[in-house]
Image 1 (cartoon, helix red, strand yellow):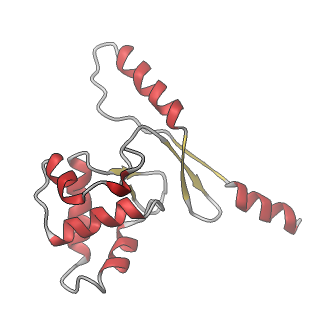
Image 2 (tube, one colour):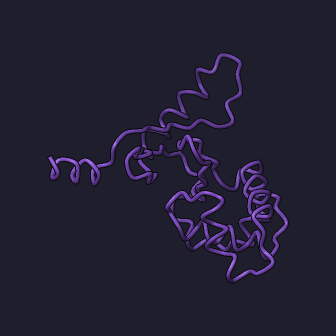
Length: 148
């Protein structure tokens, strides 16, 4: 589901067994439209002015529920904060240790890894696999090179 910006959030939530609410729809729409792999706090800060009843607890609980239901990905790529991704297709993530951005990459690689893992699991049932890489992104590397 790489191009999920056009997906109806209400139908999407229902298809994942999640009862839609104003808060859940807002969070899902935020994740669909922001490809930045935001933290729960970033989502809260962005949405709380338009939904005055929104609390941080609601954001955290909603993100946990959405991840448990398979509607979003919870990413442990950042050692300091859990990040969230509305794109549940097979892809890898790159975390820049300098600027803190998270990038998507490796769609084809992850599809192959998932395919191989499910075939060679030797009795294990693999429900999820993630490939997370850390390093310095090309923009930070360019800035670093220019400053030397």
